[in-house]
Structure formats: C-alpha cells, structure tokens
Amino acid sequence: VRTGERKLVEKNEQQFAGYVADLSLQPRLAVKTLPSGGGQIFRRSGAGWEQFLEYSQEDSLTTSPLVIEGDGRTALLISAVGRDTAALVRVDLNTGAQTVVGESARADVAEVWTDPRTNAPQAFGVNYLHTELTPLTPQAAKDIERLRGALGPQFTVASRTLDDTKWVVVVDDPVHVLTSYLYDRESGQVTKLFDQRPELANAPLRPMLAREIKSRDGLTLVSYLTLPPGSDDERSGKPEQPVPLVLNVHGGPWARDSYGFDAEHQWLANRGYAVLSVNFRGSTGFGKRFVNAGDLEWGRKMHDDLIDAVDWAVREKIAIPDKVAI
Figure 1 (spheres, rainbow, N blue to C red):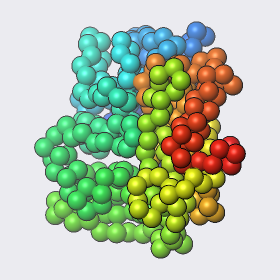
Figure 2: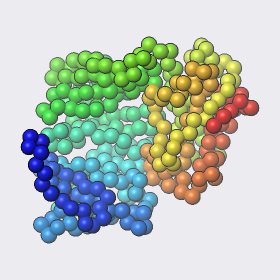
Figure 3: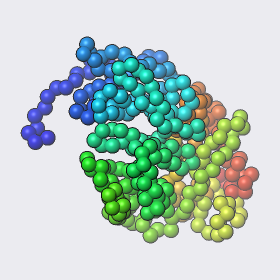
Figure 4: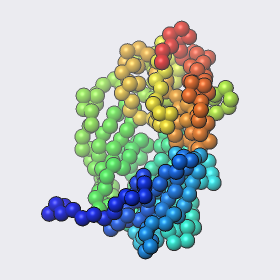
C-alpha cells in the first residue's frame, strides 16, 4: 500500500471460481464449480492444492466457505450438506471434521459476526420474516442487547476497527430508510453519523408487514405487504376497504425479498396502491428444498405461487380483484 509494489501470490490455473485467504492474506481455500452443478473445496498443502470437500448440485446455492480462523487450523463454512437449511459450520482443515456452530430450522444462516483480528465467530443472523441475531459470546450478547435498545431490532454491522472497539452500524427499517451510527463497544454509546437518504428522513413512509402465505401445494411463502396511507387507520394490518394492489416480484429466482426499506414499496404505496412481494419457490434463504423446488418451474409452479399470493390478498379483502397489476 505504501510503495505500490505488486507481487504475484497465486495464479489461477485450475479453473477455480474463487479463493479464501487467511489473516496473512495467503490463499488457503479455493472453490471449483463442477459440470454437474455441484462444487469442490480445495485446501492448500505443501504439495499444492488438493480436494478437500465436495458437494452436490442441490447444495450449490447454500454452501460456501467464509473465513480461515486465526490459527489457520480451522475454517468457517456456510453449509447445507446433509441438512436442509444452511448452518454455520467449523471445519478442521487437517482432518475434515465438522462441527455445527449455529443453525436454524426455519431459514439459512444469513450473516456471521467475526472478530477482525482472529475471525472467531461472535454471533450469527437468520433472516426468516425478519433478521434474528443469536450471540455466540457473552460480549456479543451485550452488544446485541445494547444495539436493540438503542436502534431497534433491524440493524447490520457494516464495518469495524481492527481492535474491534468501534463499529459502524446501519439501521434498515421500512420507515427509517438507512441510517448509519457509530457504536463504541467499551462505553456502549451509540452516536448517529448520517442518514443515507436524508430527503426521506421525514417523509410519510409506510410500515412493511411480514406475512406467511400458503401455496396450493403446502409451501410457506414468506411475503411482505405495504398498505397505502389512510387505508388502515386502525392499524389492523388490513385496509378498511380493499384497495388496488401491485404484485412486486423480485428478480432471480435465486434471490429474495427481505424486511426493510424498499423504495418501490414506498413509491407505489404513496400513490395509493397496496404492494405485495412474495418469496416464491426458488427464492434463496429458506433452505435447499425450497430453493430447489423452483428447478424447471419457471412459468409453472413458481408462477402458481404468485397467483396463490394474489388469491390470498383477495380472500383477505386486501386487494380489489380486478385492480391487480404485476
């Protein structure tokens, strides 16, 4: 960084899709995609790269290496091998032995807090209807309690100082847009830094409602509903009278909608529409059975899920039947 000198560390001659480096910035793990759709994880040894772990196509969207831990003997993975939802797993780089560090039966592990000096896991987050954090250390439990008390439940740790005493934390709430804060772990003080979209700081933003909708064949579709101003003065979660509805479908299928500020939800609701976003089969984050249920179902069962969600909105008297757009 000081001199601009560059030195070749690794040349990719094995069609690796990516590397994971240790805390000394030495490549220790590599990932390779197989023609079958599955993948292999390689480890660096004295003899070069050797295959270490292999997973099938059904695990390819829910399995990946994260970091090498401080002593270089273990790594953290997100893995759904041998299970449905992806768990946080520690793997011994010498023996291959694996230990589950964090898991949920409802959704994949979506985020992991790690110490910037050692990469030791401190907490993990699971995003089902909302993000739920689980501490792995007493200090992380205190951090989560403090931050929830100061900022509410919807926050993300965006960056940290190397000594891990100060964090930049971002609140992502439907009615608070995105706001960045400085958190001092020693004192517990939380200081606002700035609003990322200050022109919306005092705008009449609408709350987002998380809903579970059943598909015709029994899947649970995690969905998000925003109602227009003046339609739900009693705050019941339903309009007093059905309103026009826009079904706002995420891209992908290998993506998902989540709870938080959504510019399109707010724009359309402000114009008088209810807005419904549906995590149809093939969406990520809800386990491999759910994501793989979308295979070969584009325009078929994936679309049935969207129709089922609209039918639900009509039955619940949220949507006017002949006033629905996609």
